Image 1 (cartoon, rainbow, N blue to C red):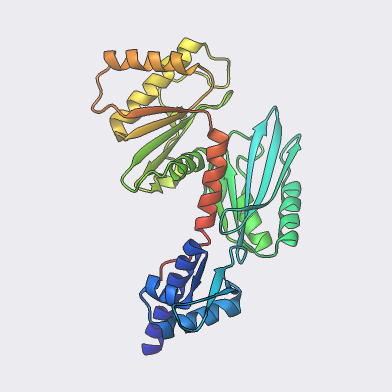
Image 2: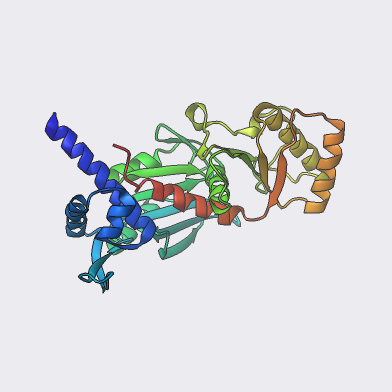
Length: 331
């Protein structure tokens, strides 16, 4: 029992040093001791182990206050890398994007491939190329326009993905942990991370892609709220919705969007609702929503924010969510 407790405490202390070094980038042992509240003796042992693993390396020797010069250590952001991929439709074809990032979210490689239809083997080739080029990849994050349940992609706007067990196949073939995330969930996460929304914030993200049904992401107190089998936010199943795959008149789109906002607001009462759409001019939408609120009382009136940065927020959120998988897990 004592050995188990000692190993547990050591792992906690190692993670503490890792987190501080990742945040600081460089530090001396005395600085680490002060920041982690650990003894210098303990820090000496931990720094030695992390250096031997390759997570830290020696940097500059700096003068101290009248004493012996101190060795500075630098965090190795390239010790663990992540491969972040997403699959989407673009101009009637399939776009597969693959990006390799380090622990600092620096982009080391980014490739985009446009193919007529989605092909598993081509996707595997992209992954193999990235792993051969960057052997330090330890996790793969995949963003999809749909939802995976127990390894199977249950719903997707890409017909070739629906019903496949692509995630399980990739995990089995390459032996790496896989994070799969819905595009709207990743986008609202990226928005909140970029705008430093705090733990107390409660936001909804609504995405209205052209030619496809809308989707919603729920970001509550710093985490995504996914519901049973990850199916929360499937607003396309609300009653009296238009046929989203067709060309929708402007007034029909505005009326449907207002009804969706009223419904989710009445049930969830968020602080803010972020809307991604480019079907209607911002001024026209804002005027219509203002008029709608005057005719339809609501329990609260959240701030509604119009954004035109879905792709940017989606990629940012997917990268950050994938990097979270590389953070030391609580022991």
